[in-house]
Amino acid sequence: MIYTLSGPQHIDTTIQLPPSKSISNRALIIQALANGNLVPRHLSDCDDTKVIVEALKTKSETIDIKAAGTAMRFLTAYLSVREGEHVLTGTDRMKQRPIGVLVDALRYLGADIQYEGEAGYPPLRIKGHPLAGGFIEIPGNVSSQFISALLLIGPMLEKGLELKLTDEIISRPYIDLTLCMMRDFGAIADWTDVDTIRVAAKAYSARDYYIESDWTASSYWYEIMALADDSEAVVRLEGLMDGSKQGDSVVKYIFSLLGIKTSFETTAPGVPNIVTLHRHKCLLPRLEYDFTGSPDLAQTVVVTCVNMNIKFHLKGLSTLRIKETDRIEALKTELRKLGFVLQSVGDDELLWDGERCQPSDEPIETYEDHRMALAFAPVALKRQGLQINNPEVVSKSYPDYWKDLQTAGFTL
Image (cartoon, rainbow, N blue to C red; front, side, top):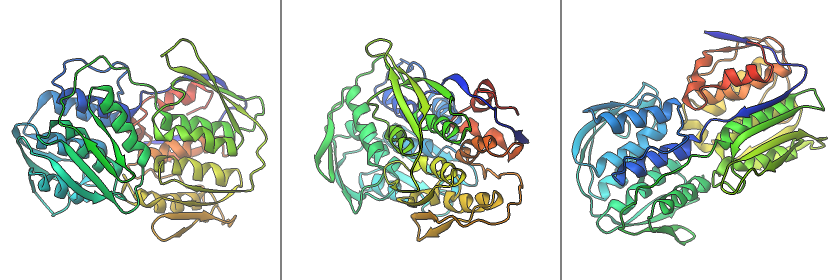
């Protein structure tokens, strides 16, 4: 399938953002570990969350999580402490995404996990049983989902869990989100030092839980506002929380540098806000930013900057290499089609010094990566008739994205 997109001349719209995928997935695992029957309210209906719901509901011997990286990491830990034997598998790309650090850590804690194919990669055969727990060290510069997966099962371990993170700690906000949610469900879990987390052997308590909307999804509306040639443009986003624990809530700061002002309207205590986005003059000639804590925003910011003619030097991008695709190479390839030449430095830096080339105007490839489609679609405000291949990939995190764009006046 190919979508051809054109942007509107004027934008004045209100959008109900999807529930947070990160919070939904953590809440489901915690509720299951608490043996709770309560389904979190305002639960995400994206592909990544659906596969966790299905896995927890059916408990079949073979669990196919498809392309859901979070599900692979969280379920690997979850199944390790639950009685039963399962094979956890996914797409061909998932079988290329390393999981050895998490498996090694779980084995150290006593888990019974075997590789069904190449060592260090899915699929996995997991024989669940109670684990003793205790002290363990793992690198802090691995995916935060590995760390969160271990933390989530910490209360179920006989000795609890003391987790020391060596090297640089990346995506710390996602670790903090996990700890905050664990405490919401009655766990005793917190940092005891700058690099050490202690989780007590105290069972979760099931409870009613409301999922706030997704700050990562909001980033594409910030991008739309930044790229709109409309000084009167207004976007209102429903369901976001001021002071959210979501790491990607930093998007409001990043885009304040790119000319977008954020204001919150509180409707009632404890109720999610309505966030209104307005444009103001952007005077930033060059952006330097470290995405170590919020790598999922990188594609949005990169595509925004080049189309605003803002040069940049971005760091902290190493985890982009092992996402649904190699996002650094994908950005370089697809932006060249639009006439922008990016340079990568090592594994974790990307820069643009203004270099351009002749655009080919070929369709944008999405590489089975939802964030490629999500981040490139707003470019239709600058290039009417922009084409995007396989646009259905957005179902992984934002199933109603194309409908919401039409609500805002885009034509597909």
